[in-house]
Image (cartoon, rainbow, N blue to C red; front, side, top):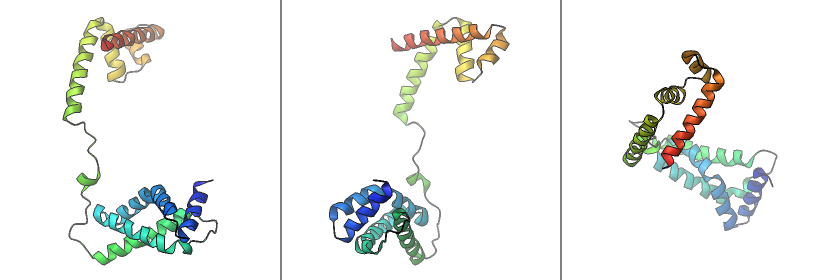
Length: 181
């Protein structure tokens, strides 16, 4: 059964008052419909209320959905979007239309604990790099930290390309062994 057929089937069961089908429909579609509400209203609380209103309307009007080859998600999104737009218009102009991104967008920077762990791992890596011959450590840094290609390293050092590859592979193996200890 395709997702479209599944949602159509759930809507037909909801029209008959099936609460389990309603719960399944909510599980399958609420995230998408919430994002529609949030995009229109730009306020998490308002979007949650609009989503609740949308699902109430879906419960009461599921019998109005007709299988006609169009996606049932289109019907659900349109219904939800219209509710969100109505709520937006009803609220009237606001002094601050900007979305407070600090509440909605997660901070992708590492937290204090992750920073401590990373600094410890960095110290271990630096210690292991010091155990390599100096020229190999420089090659590792240039290849994996600076982004130089094997060919660039070969040209810069005058060492054959295959030798550079072998040195890097062996150096990485030594680093791995050192870091595992």
